[in-house]
Image 1 (cartoon, rainbow, N blue to C red):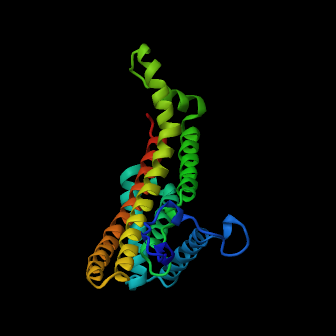
Image 2 (image 1 turned 90 degrees about the vertical axis):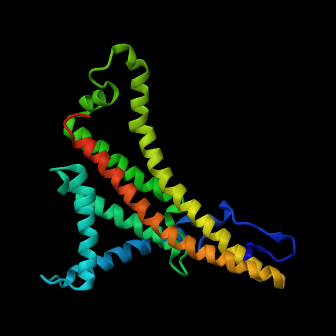
Image 3 (image 1 turned 90 degrees about the horizontal axis):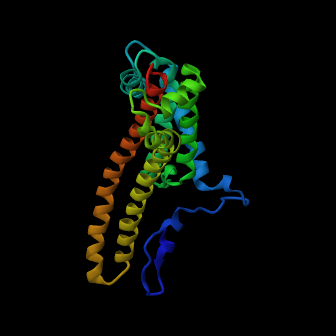
Length: 260
């Protein structure tokens, strides 16, 4: 990060999208960059936490068991049963995995030494969005059949025939283009923008701290903003994990519904 401070006296060089590109830690493969290792680390952390929380399950739960059950209960009740309805239980494992994965990778952005939200790299939101995309279309096709599903998507009942000229392309684009695009871009844009703001205030404070005596005073304000923004970013990271999973549940609910 300190490399972004222009020590030649030309002034502060603000962070940019180039600071989200990482060189391979070893070799020349894109699969050995920091975001990829963070992704694997998130899987290890999630698996370890929930295995440990459930290993010695008791009627009176320990703090660890209570924490694990609280996360599961939240996803099961709020994002599963309340949204999908009677058929929710078979989708809970998918929603639970999705929520914890996105949340953990988002929170990496404010964890000391890691300090990078994996979802600020567009490839990761696209990857999990493709999983969601395939999932809810496959569920709908199995539920209704391919022909009926496409008919329900493109030709809503009770609409005058001439309206289909405009409505059919819009509905097709909504289900097959807009939904996955906005799902991925919403998560990516929030994580990217939030982390960029943190970089600006943190590096700006460092730059001011290395400036003249009077200028150093202003570094305090910059660092204070960075700390406050970290708490705000924590809320955004949790909210985006919730929204991503909620939209997935809504799409699945639409797929299993008798009528679209």
